[in-house]
Image 1 (cartoon, rainbow, N blue to C red):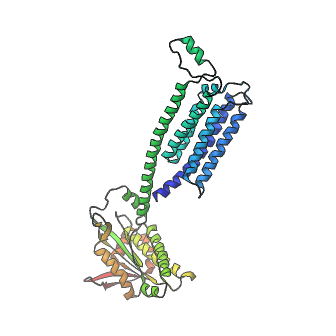
Image 2: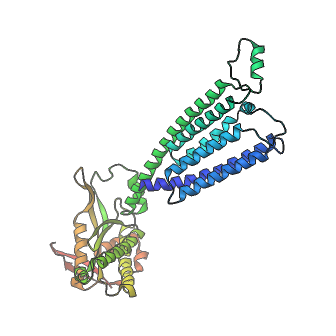
Length: 432
């Protein structure tokens, strides 16, 4: 997944590099216009257009599904070869017919750094190195061909004799080999250093992509603000904590009987749709998806940290789950669906890691969890869709009395029931 994210970044970088190339070529065109006697600029204008076409082709092929990594290396080689030709081949439109060796006097080699800077955009250190080596090779070939031209000479300069030095250096066909070697060596050094920088940037980008994926994984279980909190901490659940929270269980009634009449494909498709619907409602109300339990789920409100509206949020979620599922299940596509039952309780929970060092699991435990689960099961006995504990309703009223008024007329009646496996009775509110 991180590699996929980095690929998307590389694609965006390709576009940024192409846009940067357009801007750079535009500035170079303006520079040539002012520094070259007319009609001399027309020749480099044509070469600049070739650079633009090559950059556009590299960008389009990078996006194409049939594009291969070696294509980008080929385009870099074309760039460096074309730039070498541009810098060393005499401009035929200049009014002065200068010898080819004289092109080495204008310090034009610095334009290679523009290409190198563009390669740094795409997060590929190998491509940067290839650009450095490719430029060094083509430039060296160009220098070699110039040295083979009639009149070229490259003898050592006489630094002890000024007149002799000036005579040699002033000759238009003199090739200063020392400077040419320095150009290539320095360019290769810069290429290596830039490749290291790009490699470091790529590693950071990969780490950020991994962190983003980890946060996305957390967001599948927790609200976004909670996911941000957990992503910024190390071992956030290593120390068990106890506080009040709301626990909600939802389950499909008679799902086993329903699934016996359906194919496995239909059954899985239904579960996916139901889980998606229920999870969206839980997250919308700031709940934490603790786990999917077969054809149902367990959600908590107030984990990993308690909030100001945990009980009222859980109460609202319960109504939205019942109403949302009923609306979905009564559509023409989803007729004859199992009924949904919901149970919610509010009280103290214990939260922390359980398992081994090799396999840990975030867990919410305690009597509150057991009661919520039993309330969901008790809906079948009472013939209702949703049971709320009195503790939940009381806590929701304390948090937001105006909010609960929205559902007041749907709180059918209060009663006390005994829950399976638990001594005594608990006061509950039946939801219409």
